[in-house]
Amino acid sequence: MLGLGIIGWIIIGGLAGWVASMIMKTNAQQGILLNIVVGIVGGLLGGFLLSVFGVDVEGGGLIFSFVTCIAGACLLLWIVGLVRGRTKV
Image 1: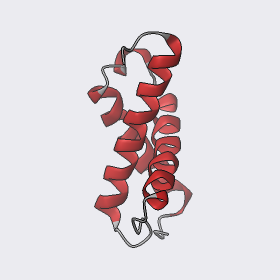
Image 2: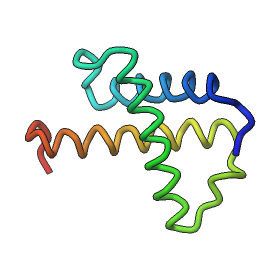
Image 3: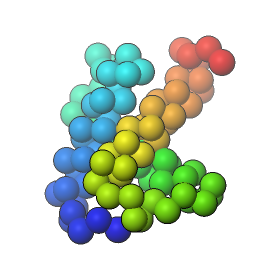
C-alpha cells in the first residue's frame, strides 16, 4: 500500500473521480465531494478487479494506482448509468 495517508487518498480520489466524470460526461451532475467518493470507491473497485485477475496492485506505484482509480471510477459511473437507465449497453 502506498504511504500516502488519508489526505493523499482524498486528493488522488478527487482527481481520479474528476477525470473519470469528465471521461464519462457526468461532471455537470457531480460536485467535488461526489468526485472524491467516486474516485475512492472506483480505486477500491479497480484494485479488487485487478487483484482477482492476478495483477500486483500493491507494487504498481503512484501512476498505476491513479490509472487504476480512474478506470475503476469510470466503471463505477458506467454501472450507475446502467442502473439509472441513462447509459446504453
